[in-house]
Figure 1 (spheres, rainbow, N blue to C red):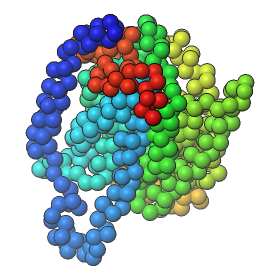
Figure 2 (figure 1 turned 180 degrees about the horizontal axis):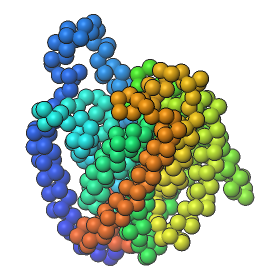
Figure 3 (figure 1 turned 180 degrees about the vertical axis):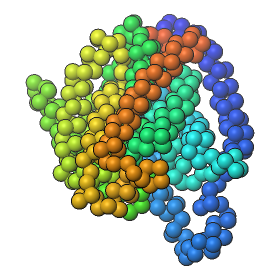
Figure 4 (figure 1 turned 60 degrees about the vertical axis):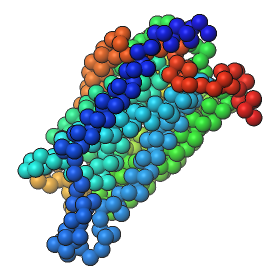
Length: 462
């Protein structure tokens, strides 16, 4: 009780800081959206005139009907998948789902502006025109910040999370522009742009915010039966919808179709090897729920870059096979090493689920692009898949492979350097972060019922 009282006293400023930040931010968004954001031609009422001018005979040609089903799936992944995946801590379920909700809603508005300024600002009108694809890309941008949240889960205040998201979205928009526009790398599912960046961004922030006395909250760091069940719900939502995530913004037709098939197969393969390694790692042969909740998703991360390429169905299975092994081994061996030797306290193990598989995805993408041939893709297929048009019409596949590798390096640099800078900002003693003995506890920032405060609370509820 004394510890809780001390924590509340330390964080008194959060009672004013959080609502002020939320109100000021939302007012700023209203103003900026009023100045810059407009509907694109397919969501504007002038669509009727556009159809007549372009001889479009049916509304089915509107991008909404191609993209909205994928947008729905990605949106569920962001709010339900990521949110519930982080509910494994016994006393931090409110923070996992609730702050995930806050960060995503905060970040997607800023993402629409940042990505709009870099990708779709009309030089003549000075306006950003948004449609359903813009919403998908904003969710992708937010995903990078939610990945980073996993590294600091339970150890930071909601205001710190908002600051982290503000800078994370900004860094994401810049590195995305460099990788996709300047380097012209292909990364439909975001192995590099989303997962590698988000993973190293979060890991570096966690390293900067290292807590030598975090063992004072060790009693809170574990899971209980029901919290692992809730986390598994997040896993299943992510696993089922990952084919949509990797194919959401690919070209209509064969590219989108191929990306969904490849991801589907890769994920299935990952489950089998994850189960095998998890069982082998235990003397009893039993499974570790941490591995099943996380490593089973690593294949979806690793195939994000090459999902739309002609990697072939058996190639997708191979990527999933090795990702299940590498990710699970990461939880067994690498995570303890990172915390003990490098002082990186990675709450959710994002290094094993996002950072490391993201790098694997970048490597697979570079090799697959460099090995592409006209006999496999066809002349027009190569042009369509790698967008060899305009300024890039003379680029060869070997050159494309080199730029793919360069894109992966850019994402790592932005994650590490950006994380170090943002982490230093978050170290300032003004954000109302929890005391070492009160980490991983909802009670610091949430009104928690009395029954939740007992160790047998769920039995009482039943």
